Amino acid sequence: MSVSAEVLSEVAPVKALVSRRFYQPELDGLRFFAFLGVFVCHTLPFEASFYHGLHLPMPWLWGGIVKAGAAGVDLFFALSAFLITSLLLREREETGDIALKSFYIRRILRIWPLYFLVIGIGIVLSHTMVNQKLQWYYVAGYLLFVGNWVHAVFGRPESIVFPLWTVSIEEQFYLIWPLLVKKLERRGLIISAIVMFLLATAFRIGFVLAGVSGGYIYYGSTARCDSMALGILIALFADQLPKLTATARLLLVSGGIVGWIVSSAWLTDQPGPISMREVPGRLIISLAAGAMLYGCLYTRSKLFTGAWIVQLGKVSYGLYLLHLVGLLLAKSILHPVSGTALLASKAVGFVLTLILAFASYRWVESPFLRLKDRFARVLSRPV
Image (cartoon, rainbow, N blue to C red; front, side, top):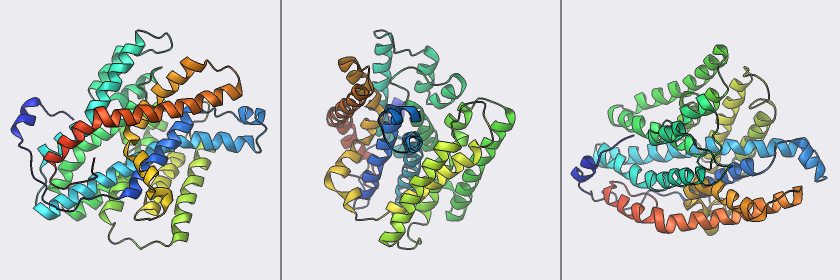
């Protein structure tokens, strides 16, 4: 996505045309838990031997749970697609049109400040720390918002900027989807989302048959768009979906977690060459993300709407982009060598990540978020 400075100056701030903000606090709570899964995945070992050494029962299960945390990314994708689609539909309903330039400016003001700051931190660390390496082609990929495809080709960089690949996928989505929402009627949007969902599986099959690196399945936009498709469909049918009981919500969320664990433990990211097991594995993970989103929608449970959980969800963008910085700081301070010391350093890293995220929200993100509201035709979450 690229909007020039000229466009920014040409688009006058618009007054929101809807008096009531579109805000669902339970989704902030869910966003925090999505981050928490990713944090656990990036901090603890997958190997059962580690948990056996800690004398935990069923050590293989703990390894599967840790690995399943990576699926929090799919939940992020589903949440983003749901929220963006809901806001765009509400804008079109209330105003009769969608102001694309204002939309892109809002996305720039929300995503870019912290995103480019993290790139800058990564570049500095790559020149000052021996365990931080960031080659030029990764930087180029992030700057052009195709970092996920650079990951697919070259693998994961040894850098704190690693999480930025997901932002590339979301920016590609933000570039294309609003255009379709502006042009298509409801039926066309439903068909588009269904096609997107089916194409993800088709591309995964194609990548397996082509014998390419598994990175194309894990990082490729075309293979990871089914979670977004489900978020879109939930937004399109939100008012028509059955109202859920507490039991139904529990079944959807717990079933989604079990699906993540089963897929992560036995189907995805296994050692060895890419295989067809990745296809059903990633499909289950995507469906599980959709189930959890639906299960949490409109819930009043304090687990998702409690004040602290919601506040943590509000800073989840900073938590996600800065958590590797927090972990690196903790490792540099504590120099852990044993299993217990390793766990202690991870706990310190989590605390440091919280501090960094709240500081980022206060001094980096909030000034741009307040400016972002000036270009909103439908107000969303307050700063």
